[in-house]
Image (tube, each protein chain N blue to C red):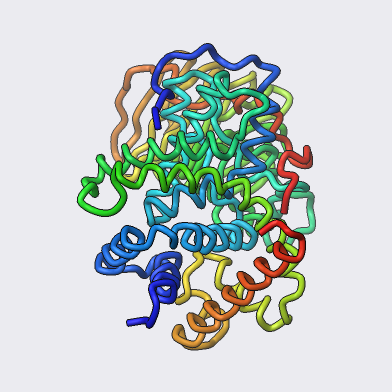
Length: 261
Length: 184
């Protein structure tokens, strides 16, 4: 055991911040802080240092409100997180090509997985919150974290997991999203649809506008269908099932909203 | 400390969106640190922070423009933490109402933490290259010592001790900086 309460506290905080504290450590921390309230400032300073370093080197730690909350409050955003200045995340083109990026993260209210900030492999892994991904074709995808999207080409993405809403203007041409349950592709006109890839791979497709084809089955505006590996079935159309717009904050990269650090 | 964030309040003027955004982004690390200090778990802190951010936004109309935003935000966060603890059945531990005064003081320290953050930026620049590389490795990726050790091809024990040493040096540097500036 460390010799002084302060030293003991520091040792526990070290474990705590690296997620290695055991229940006994937490209990001991309680005892220490109860017996020595004067240690609270040191405790807070130590935690704050950890949080700042985590934020500095691992991306923003704060999370944006999740979709379910948006539903409850309407389009009210409560937080802005990972918009450090100059954040314009270009998603890399497919290996072996030198073409322009297939897509760009054009707005972020949340946290990307560490390492995705450089757009490696065209992959967007959204840990939490919302991300707007604009494909070179003009299609716009809003991801709801947690979700993973691979920008394979200007006209094609792969939704590996999570929820996404997709807007495809007619000028964008045909656009397709591959999911574990099959491909979802739009028609020649404007289209807007949502895709929810469940943890079991089953996928719900809901169409807001235009028409899409999912798993070989046409779906028109106002309909929603659930696809599994071998079957599909209609499900209720729930308008609020997907987030279709980013919150009404100016969240574009480079706006200098995060002035510090 | 009253939690007045559950009652209905008029929605903030749209003109205040930008103000909220500015304040929240400026102090988010301080609010998060406050939350983490209480919940002591990164995942739980994320969840509480989400709840807190929503409450802050929903009730931003009540925040006076000349008020202390981080202190207000931390007090809102405090009640979200209490809810989280009840939800997780963790009331058997730690702070209860008897710590309220301490926690209010702690919330008021959040402004002080902004100065510490500024000082930390300067201290990071003064770190020897080797230490800077190690501390970056520790916080990059998943932010675990094990991952950092693997990346650096060192043992976890070595990295753990080195990270503790570097963080202690950074804390000392921050304290010296603030003392020199008469802010500590």
